[in-house]
Length: 475
Image (cartoon, rainbow, N blue to C red):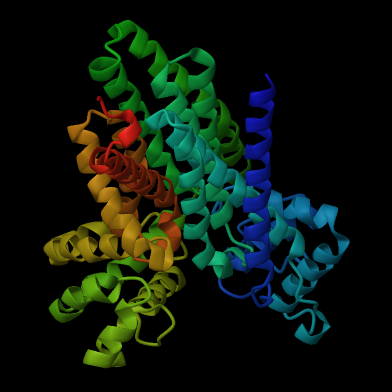
């Protein structure tokens, strides 16, 4: 009992240390104006909730919510705006900063009046990230049945998050999606190891909650179900009736979380669905990348190597070689895609009724280009962890090969959902790694396993080569 308490205390201390490291890294980043980047999306929805009691489309409606009540919307998932709202209720200073920022966006206030302040969100992000790290560490421990994997994987995951500290200092969703996914993946690993009704229901609920943070995660519901089937039929060898019950329970738990949001959308917005316009807008912006030249496509592979790729390519080929690949340049694919999206909205009002025709026209005219471009976009999106990613990605690949050879299917099942999301983002979004931070889990677990196995092999070799002491030799 005493040993268990000590072990538990050590893990709590580790979690607190991870939180302290991440919080410090985030708080040391320069203060961000609350309308920079995508922050105004979530801040405006939280403002409308606080002042009008309406979950709106935020900046994507035509109503000045500082003077009028906006209509209900469903462009964004509800989880993150509600968290921002909770932060405004807990910290009046943050609430004032949010109100002032929204006022400036609607030309109702002067920017000089506003304080740049988001500390409660920064603390929240650090706490969520720490929970995600612990979930990843526990998943690795369960997969490889080794307590040492908890510590090594947790340390690697923390280091992999640090290069994105500036991203986490924005009022945006990455911290929440990373944390929720990591916890949901832990529940799924726990379920696959020993399927039990409470575990399956918990996994279904967590994956449902993840969808309410970002709608694209809805694709993981059928992926998780497929993993339950694979685990039941081919690994655990459970009867098909039992596996079927597991699938139905997962689906029911998922729907229990997602269902109320669907009903709310049908009643308040007038249509079913997790979101509206969001997927169409992202896909139209993605199609702009299909204009990539063969030279740009080839250079994307070395260019996207973290830290070293961009400066090398800029030096050898010039900054203009990949000018269109980064979002902040005027000629970038991102700006071209967004301009096209804005023109369609201006001409037609809504994108969803058009998207089938847009997709058909793109695939008809540039289908092979679309498929070819998705490959470098996926390549670029997988390099999570900054400079550490140069080791994490290849060692993860090696770990997958070793898992096949050593019959560790649970690791492969754990890795499958993030790889599916990587492919999805390459197909419908863009190449930025912020969409693929959930790869940190399997990348760090696989790397930790490789390191642990290499260390064990080194110890065995050293023991074999060590001379036998004279006192232990037979006379």
